[in-house]
Image (cartoon, rainbow, N blue to C red; front, side, top):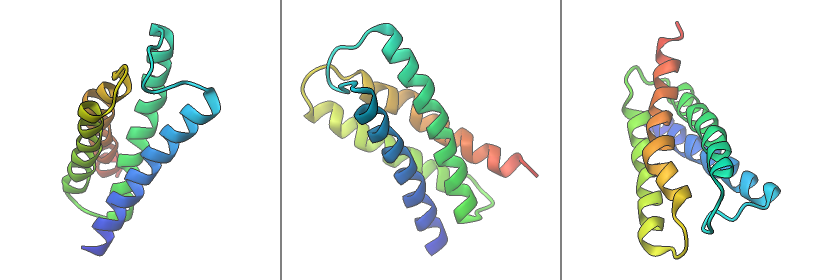
Length: 116
């Protein structure tokens, strides 16, 4: 059980840290209007790190089912949904997190389980 909790926490940390790094070092404002190119590049970057976060969560948890990845995806989508309703400005980054990044974290966990 502790490994599963640590897996979820580590996966979420990877997702959040990579997001914060992207926005800090690129100068992109996640709550302001962005061009289609910026949104697409952010989507690709976020998709990669979301899959990595799901893979890492499964690796740490050593679980034989996708439950850990589903919990991670639920937390990712939950925080993004909370931010969507509470934050002002443009909400493209939250929508990406809900509809692309959270599901791709499950895919990352699935890749971990199928790698054998």
